[in-house]
Length: 313
Length: 269
Image (cartoon, rainbow over all chains, first blue to last red; front, side, top):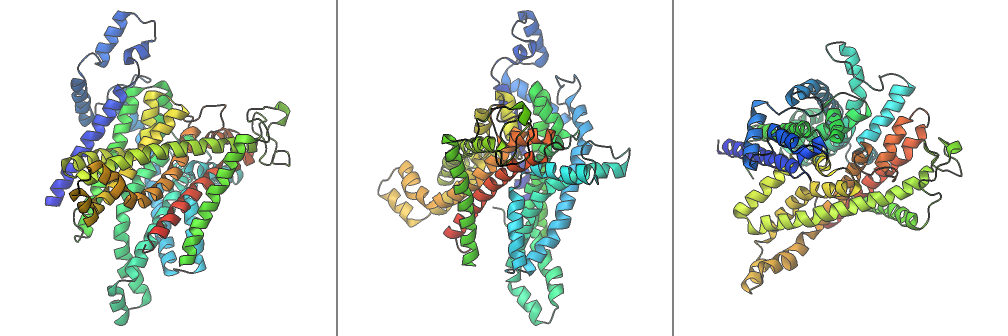
């Protein structure tokens, strides 16, 4: 219980700091925001009117409280570029990015767990060495380059998948899956490499523990030791890197959406940068940071619940 | 086992030295001027005159790759210096002083880590505009929390040692204890982190330049080249290979070097 309380406390404090940081970064913009929007030869009355509208004429802490209150109630202000509420724009883009994230994680787990087990089982053999080299390369390849190559091979040459564009799930589920598969794979490959390496290490650690020797000596089959006892214990620490993977997958989709021209979060964010659509960028940054913190919070609690031996650091 | 470990270090060091050599050569000699355009020579496949082919403006890709290595080293080195020095100082103070200062510093570091990947850099670029300098500073700031965490845990571990207490008893100032007594002991994990961060900075710069938010044209950057290559992927599929391979080799080299140094310093793991 003490753990839960303390973890909740740090969760909220960190969210608060994230919000203060995001708010302040966008306030230290060189030059007056109203002047930037209206241009250099704007009338003083126009500037005053816009400042009132943007709220930049009030004290900083008031502006922050206003904005922070809005974030919690889902009111993130209005986009300068689209003249539409930020929350509406963001909700429109969520299905694409969320599908990408979920598919990448599913692909990662689906491939990484068997490969990791296999690598640990064959520890020290040439297969293990080959896998170790492959995973090192997998971690080094930029996922957007991987995306371009996958698109060239499977999208443009063999035409198995659509090279770019997105079809909503509600319109045609199989087309949607088809358009999201290559980008998800490109995001997943570096993550697969990370999980394989981590799972291999935790499996090998577990295999050296006393309970494995006990299980062996009481005559349990090699397979049931590996898949029932060892795997269960080896997968628990893997949960801890899940938070990192989730964050990486989100960050990966920011760039990959650009490669495959997918109308998600990342494309909206990147295209808004050249327009300097500050309310929209600020809102999206806070949402992404909030999702990452929430995931880490859930994972910490889950981990503690699965393995009560872990003490709070 | 020892054998495979030294192999990791060797491969890493080989890749890094190779790239460093390419970078040094590019300072003095390039096969072609990087922005020398020949309209008739657009999209030439790899040949003896142009080992990596030519791009959409008829520029020599090899020359641009070589010049791009300068960008990669500049960004990596500067970002790691900012992150390494800033992070080590923050981590040292947090770990050495402890208490509420530690708590405040580490909460801020946690908050910075909540911005995944290039998001912090994107925020920075939005505010200050996209240029190589801004991108590099942003990547440096982004790597501060990683260094701070490593330095902090080292300082917490070492501040309880007798030699630190002895130095304190003999009247050494806190600054001198931090820098001359504890820091040399925690330097090796920081060097490992520096190597890994270098790889991370190169990867992030490539990503940002690919998005058009890092190096501005016509200056060559590997990430930027991949963006151009993608537009002409069916016409000149080879264009995408060289920049991608060079980014991968750089990241792989620095990762392996970092791993190798770690295993050399700490053979238990």
